[in-house]
Length: 327
Image (cartoon, rainbow, N blue to C red):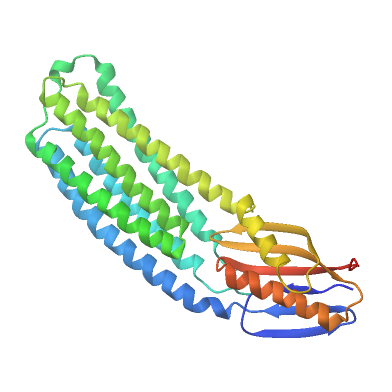
């Protein structure tokens, strides 16, 4: 006897074929969550775009007027934030689409694609900043390097405060809706804040009589950006290659299933992360002498219990194996 239960939804169509019961499901229960997900992501992204645009213009003008290469490099980093946020918006919009005939499992992985695009933009930006700074350092004639003015110093401080605030704001909402792309954008804000710290140190050092400090600060900014790009890229790739959940989470799945009435044990559990959702395949053991409908009811309890306890689970398949009750 085998029982197959697939899907996680409110609307269920049952088809009986011999000794199989197949639960066919739609994604209707996720519509409300998807709408809230999109609204939150769009609101945060628009705030990010406006703040970054204003900050980019301010830092660029400050860098040019105050003759600071580090501040100009920092303004380019902020400009890349605008483009990366646009990538996030596109990714969130597409990933929020409902399942269709060609994409029965949904479009969640498009958010991972957006994160990879964002990581690429970050990496290219960082390399460009680093290349320019290394050229100035390799030039050797540091006396010709301009000493940044006070405006560049003030711009760096303003940037640190604004970008750290944007990081905290974006991170809170990214965790609430569990958005990898939005979290990547949050770290982009943090990398910008850290790069502004480097710019502040470089500008201050240059004003204290060490003009080489300004291009060195640009190199430090380059390293911060590269690290952030690598972490964002690897997180997105792991989500796209069906990486299993963490061991602790899998243990919780097994404990939840084993606690249900009628379950003698859990024989197998496979999980995979699909975008920001989790897919679960589980094999439970029940009394082999039970009737088909009784075994089906037990499998349904396992299905519903896991779905209720773990909101990130989008799809569950429960397979029932016959077992023996020990006296």
